[in-house]
Image (tube, rainbow, N blue to C red; front, side, top):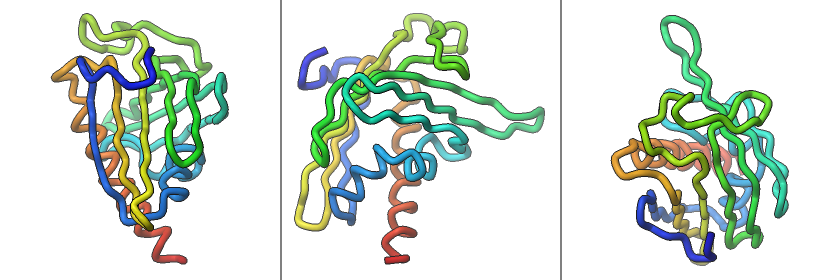
Length: 167
């Protein structure tokens, strides 16, 4: 995939956070921070294994409690580009709990959903605030991913507030 993300069949979200760039970078690269905000409202992240280096693997589990038990969604991927406090790029594929890629159809995804997508996070320092542009390339329009990301970023704002309050 190219350096600049293709925005056809992509979710692109721009947010500005009232937090320094190094803290926003940690939100994406520190598993303990990542677990606190990632995923749509109602989901928790019990597992976030992140080897943040080019070629490093990631394995993430999102879980939602339902009346008949819990539903777990696993994803795996690889970091392909890392420029600290500036750019993070990784692939993402549906997986089992061991990190083995599974077909999107087996995960209940709609027909034509790609086996691998790519997430690009661009950060820019605004003097104590941080502008973030996140592009999730390969996600079909109407997949619901946009709403999921927006909910996750709302959770991120709340998590940042708790961290900055404690400082």
